[in-house]
Image (tube, rainbow, N blue to C red):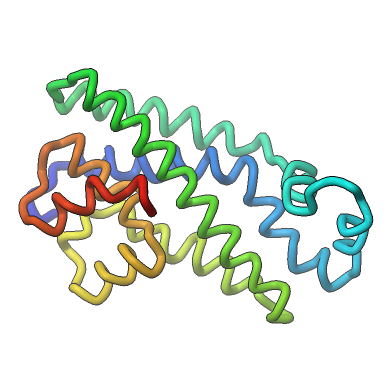
Length: 190
C-alpha cells in the first residue's frame, strides 16, 4: 500500500494492538461500564469514598484479558522488527520506548475522553465504540493512503496517527516530507 510492504504494515498493526492492549487492560472495562454505572446510580458510591474517584473506579475494572493482545502484538512486533533489519542505535531504541509509552497514553486518553460523554449523553455507548473501534482501525494502515481531511482529523482531533503511523515512520526512517518529520518529534507533547 503506497510503498509500504506487508512487514511494515504488520509493524503498524503490532504498534496499534500493543498500545491498545496496555491501555485496555487498565481503562477499557471502566470506560465501557461508566454509562451503566452513572445511569444506575452506582457511580455515587465512588463520590463518597476518600480516594480518587477516577483511579478508584478504573482500578476496580482492570481486565486481564488484554494480556493476550499484549502477548500476540509483542510477538508480531518483534518478528516485524527483525524482518525489517532496522539499524538500531541507543537513541532510536530509547525514543521508540518513549513513543510506545505515548501511544498507550493516547489510546487511554481517547477511551476516557469518549467515555466521559456518559456524564452528559444518556446513551453514549455507540460514541465510545466508534471512537475505540471505528477510528482506531485507521491506524492499521499507512496514513499516506488517506485524504488530507482524515489525516488532520486523526492527527489533531483524535490523535490516533501518533499510535502507530508516526512511530513507524521514525522506526523505518520513512518520513518523506516536513510535516511528517515534525509530527514524529511532537508525539511526546500530545
